[in-house]
Image (cartoon, rainbow, N blue to C red; front, side):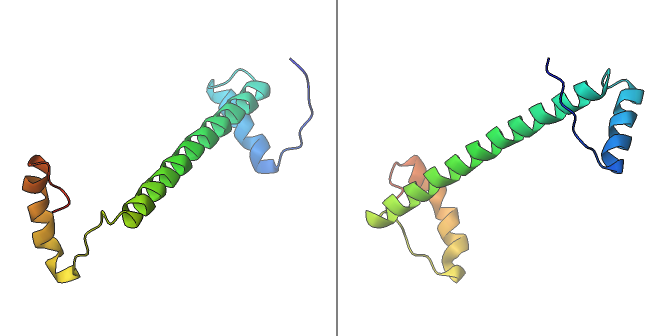
Length: 95
């Protein structure tokens, strides 16, 4: 393991000390390593969500380009939603 000195704020030093004192980590290096792994996992999760959102937008734009959307007035929305389930079970969602 390579040693690297990193300045911490007062809050950071207090938090690291509290985590070590609680036994959640054996030393400051373990706290920092855990925090970095958590940040990496959070970034991967965020990137996955962003890609899923992009895919949904692409699908929506494709549906728009290919006239696979149904315009529904706000007042008609409850009855439209109620009618979705039978239409889907019949395999005719676009009619």
